[in-house]
Image (tube, rainbow, N blue to C red; front, side, top):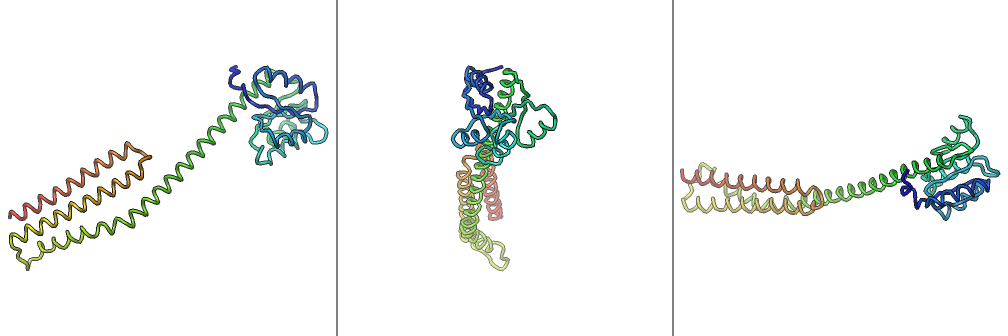
Length: 259
């Protein structure tokens, strides 16, 4: 057994038998564990208002507040509900064990106990608890990350939905307006006008392309912390597609003018 895995842990021992307390206190201390002791359920509840152990070893048969009731109260308290509780008792009936688990205990040790067994169970539940804590921390970090990403995407959508249509309108109007001269069968354009209008269409296309590129750049900057590799590939492909579209339109207009 790797003792280093349990060194530094804090264990609360609750037992009305001073001899049991002494044996467990000395044994755990020698292993590098910090033991806390309480001789009644009420003492344990009061101690837990100031201390927060990793595990509680709880006797059942105690005067006053017994182990079952103590366990129920601890599990009903938000501050102590996640602390693993291991019952220690001479009760060996199945009904007693079931009652203990229903009260909220995670394990059960029958007296007279063996120190090696207690150590093995402490180690097992410490590992489980640490894994649960690590998972909770990761889940909380993931939720925070997802919330930041959701807000980022919402801000991005809102900004683009407000600014992009307005910015696109001017170059689109120019392209549509000047293109109308070419498709009007009743209008014969002079060569210089063909060049002028064709250039306006071309310049409008360039402005439109710049707006698209700027919008993509803005979106990429906003998403800088997310999927950087995929984003760069997407930007290169989108930029290349835009360049090909503009070049194709320019070649088409040039061929029409030559005819």
